[in-house]
Length: 297
Image (cartoon, rainbow, N blue to C red; front, side):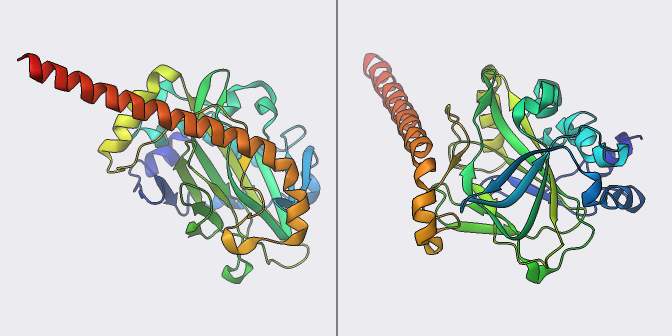
């Protein structure tokens, strides 16, 4: 399959800045190719790796690619191998990007997810790095054949503290979304209201940069019109405990189940605050140095 034509079709990407840089592309694959992808049945997808059943990760199954058909692999091959990096050319050179598909067995993060009725994914930031390469972007592709608006299940982009939903992206079939990932790129999935027997199907891919390329990335994003600072710190995937979908989503059941997420959240806050402090000190040092130079003139 020639992915170059698909990539070329979407060379112009409209980046939206709030709450953090993201882009939406509808009708991503030509209809005949999307039909092949969406025709893959639930029974054909057998390489299940993980099932999530907590109040912050509910009714979601994650799958690898073992034993899957060529049609099933199409989105992963494009997003992670054949041209997927070029979609971020506005922010960094494609040659500098490393994808999750570059790692054996996706480093234990699996690229295909199925979610069922009443499922949700609480506000979280993904793992920050692999092999000292910083995780700077995500892509998500919706591969279900049909989705009705009243079934909800939107991808939610939250404010920088993960407590306020800002943007709801409807999971329309054949829609691709991209977003820049930092330690403040909280995202999740709204509660799903599809009928029993229907699944919300998504492929996702992560993108990484060497630490030396982060300053260039930060500068390019600033030039695109994003005025806030973007920072990267070392942390695992971190969920907001107790409030999966914002302040109004607290439940007594979630209170008990959120305890297991609390440790990683506290660690995340420590590193995030520490990073902000270092940046502030660096800023004040620059001001002091400038004052010294001016006073010596």
